[in-house]
Image (cartoon, rainbow, N blue to C red; front, top):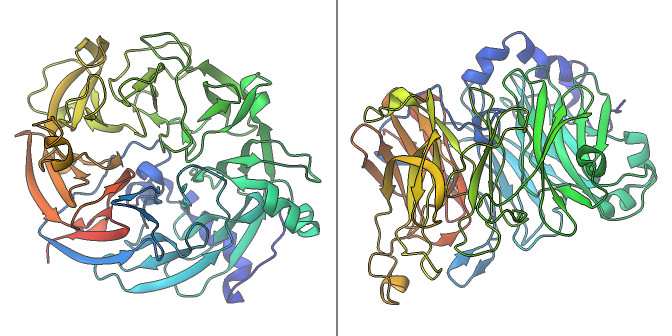
Length: 510
């Protein structure tokens, strides 16, 4: 069982877990009235229950990076998705150093006023791009943020300036306290955490050296009562060559929250999508991830942020890169909930998490699926089949067509919209129709207005209207920059959020 080792402003200390776990009583309510994790919920569907107001004005903005490291005109970093609490406050992760150094801030949704600021000693695992320091809401008032040495910090209150903060280690705080330096140097939280309705915390961790707990890379669970459980990736996959949970890959939960899905890479290439029991972390399901066209192992990149998404019917979607590497597009792989049945893939998967679009939100759709999925759909210039006409698409997961760029049967396109702004570098280089790409890894879908909020490298955020299949609203956020994919979020009071050029922008009506 974990031990409390840090308390800040202690009046709330005795009731810290009780306050966080009050979400048990109002589980459905706080989930539907908040954006609790990457993709909005433990299934990562990107589906909002609250409508987004018109994109008329940037209401306020705040940095998510105090020391952005530009590479020419590009910004190679993945930023954590903002979260929106049950009361409407926004939780923002801010990078403070060149590579490491992070804090989380709570801000007023309407005016950006600072509510709280909390530092973390989290250390990023090594990577080609700067990975994510992601958090997750915990019950009605709590917040889970990664810490150093494979630990996490549980903040009891996100609506007050002061709160109890508890440090937790899945392998035991006594071991961590006895040798902090060894654990800080060798054990890293490598995914954003995901929290279920009962207050159980799930995340992947990566181990690089010897430690007193004899940890190897695996998946961890910290229960609401404080009991740590973990499973090595070799056990989860049944493969001694298994390496680690894929970097930035937030665990996804089945709709009944009995199964946790996560992707695991192998030392020699390729990897698995696995389903673990959420109580014991014992393996339930596993599938090797293959390129559906070539039959070779799909590529799992640590510089991406693809995460499993669980659909309303418990089908599981996960984006991978094609093998052989050809067009830098990949596939949105698609399985049933047991991972035994491989279904129709989508024609784009790189660094992308699919969002759910209820079928009735697309009036032109005449098929039989109850829901559709929204994915990136770029056609990168400079690659063999790429024309630079970068798009986003709504796809039918249960119908197929011959997709011309991949030259393979893939999910049927329902509606598609291309980018707006010419990409002058490629236009002048022989791709006359090239446009700036969509920098979105998880799009916020608004069923009430039949639309989605999507962010672009051209420095603008757009509302994609599914009824007219047009970009019906646009708001300028920056001058535009080549950057890693980020998330859009819909919060309370109609306010939407997008990250562009290292700033979080709140958008809505004045």
